[in-house]
Each structure stands twice: as C-alpha cells, then as structure tokens.
Length: 312
Image (cartoon, rainbow, N blue to C red; front, side, top):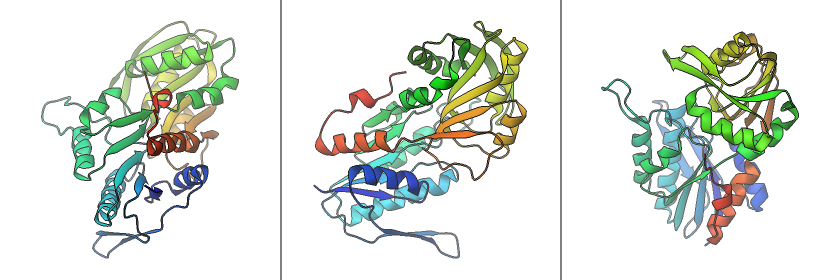
C-alpha cells in the first residue's frame, strides 16, 4: 500500500511538516462552502488502494473541522482507500467526558462514535484531556505525548528555584511527569470551576514561596484556570513572572490578554493548533510534526509506537 497524507483546512502547515518528514506530497483536495453553508469536499487525486492518513485537529471552529474530517474520510472511502487513519493532534469535545448535572450530552462519546461512522481503522491523537477517552473509541487509539518535547523547551525556565505547578487536580499526574523530566518539585492548585470562563481557587499544596512557577496543563482555552492559578501562587509567595506550558493553545476570546494581565512572562505550546496572529505574551511554538511523522511511518510499516505513547 502506498503511504498517502491528506489534510483538512484546520492546520495545513503542520500537515505540510509531516509530509516533508515522510518525503511525500500532500494529496490535493477541494474544500468549499455552498451559499447555504453546506461544505463540499473533493479529493483531486486517486487514493484507491492506499494507506491514507487524514490530518485534522478539531479545534475552533470545532464542529466545522470535525465535519470536514468526516467528509474527507467519506471521499477517501468512496474512492477505494484500503486503510484510513485519523491523525487528530487536538481532539475537540475531549472535556465533555461525563455528565456533571445529569441532563447533558456526553460530547466525547458522541465524537468517538462519529469516528466509527467515518470508518476509520485507527486514530492518532496527542495529549488527550484524559487518557480514559481511549475507552470511548471502538477502534485503536494511539495516544501520543508531546510532553518530552515541551519539557525540553521549558528547561531554560526551570532553574534551581523553580517549581512545576498543576493548575488543578486533573493536571497533577501531568505535573509529576514534567517534574521528573526537569528534576523540579511539584505543587498543585486546588480549584472549582464555576462556569466556562470562571474558576474559584481554594489553596495550593506544595512549597511555592520564593520559587518561580512553571505552570503545566494539557490545554489553554479561555485562560481562566491559568489566571486563577497564577494569582493564587502569587498570594502563596511564589515569585512573579510565571512560565506556562501546554500542549494545545486554543487561546479562545481574550485569553491572551487575560494571561498577560495575570503576569505570565512566557507561553510554550505545541503547534497542534495554528498560532494566534499576535500575542501580548511571548509564545514559543514547539514542533510536533516529527513526532506525528514517526508514528505514521511506524504504523504504515506495522511497527510499534510504544515509546511515543502517553503514560500519564
């Protein structure tokens, strides 16, 4: 089977970086919208009999990018693709993994079902919001991690007086992973989410006084969690000028302005999602094209990707 890389519109530069690493050319495709808003997708080169990898993070606009991925999958299947793998560097709806108040949809499960409807044989994802999401999918999920790459990028900011901080309990294991890689102590901020844009902090576990914080999380969305955590760290005696590290930088709404107002000095994120056009806070982008290309090459050749997987 020929190795074929195809991409939607969500992050073309990342797909191009993957294709360069694999020494292949992206398959041309047409993506357009009709006047009524419906999407038209067409693959412009035959993928009949190929091993096709569809690269499409489902970040904002989540619903449009998700539908685009499914339409591309359908186009490939109808052309006779032998095998179809979804490469989803960022998975939207990943936080919708349970019912908090009883009368809610579980979006993560529905999205997983859509991947089954799209007839993907396998999904490749990077630093899912929760490892338990793998169990939502009927097909194998290769859950890769960019944490070692991000930790290396953060090393210059992790001196003797630094402390790795989880902004909530959900990120505690992730913080432990960073702490082990960087040789730094770990602290945890305790919070309660009040709404999609507001959180309440109850305290900090661990010694942060006189230390510079390296706040780590899987994603930055509105910035509310990071904002509250950094302010709590300041109240607990941490030095000003925190660095924030996250795999996925969504930066919704006024998130960057909010982080700048909180005194964040540096943001380090992967290029799983497109970078914002401008930012009041310096952003260092860590490339994950090599990570994804390595996984794709191994899967295409039937080799293990065990050493690339997340284990937090």
